[in-house]
Image (cartoon, rainbow, N blue to C red; front, side, top):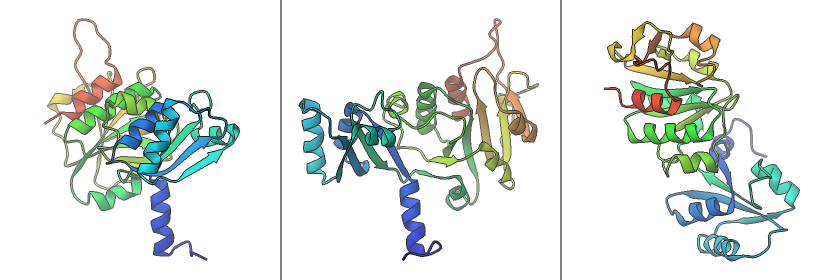
Amino acid sequence: MIMADSPEYLEKKAFFDSLITLYGRNVAVEVLRDDTIQIHKLHLSKSNRSDETIEEILSLADMRRVEIKYHTKESLSRISKNSAQDQGVAIDVHSANYRHVSSIAQDFPNDFRFLALDGINNPQNLGMIVRSAAASKIDGIILPRKNSTKLSPLVMKASAGTLFKIPIYYCNDLDEILTFKDTAIITLSSHAQSDIHSLKIPPRSIFVLGNESEGVSDKIAASSTHSVSISMYRGVESLNVAVTAGIVSFLP
């Protein structure tokens, strides 16, 4: 029996916590073709009819010696969590860059700059945010599991292949970032008086971006150390959150 506090148990838990389950036949082919992506397991529905794509999936899995598990259609849908779009295929990807938010203290003991996403429910927006952050000097993204879109094939597609290139730290609720010591929590708000370009960014900073309709949640906004806006002209009231993330990501 493995003890819950043993190094072996903690290592195993960390591995499984870093698994991301994607779904869909074309996504499986794309992932299996990419040798830089570590694959844990391939899940297939027993009801799949053989076609060119399924044959390629099986061939690639055999070439990479990926374990294959066969399931009923119902069981497969519980794994993919999207029976309408999984096409009878799901794949578990191990991403060393997908870790719990508690790992930040160890990964970045000194200075850091993060994006934290509050209520971002559009997978295309999330994918574009990932792409901008991955292309910049942002150290990582904090993504809560509650009230946020999940990492999915739609996110992967919108990120244009950058999903696994930047650290993404998950938490249950974004309130967890409020416990970080000596860290500036900077919220973006169209109502803020201070312009983002006049802000002297502290060495340890987390920029919080909310969705377009509701913005940053009240608790995070009330607990923030800074609130800044992006100046708007010609009567434009706000920017898409992915565009805002691009501006924040490339601040000097």
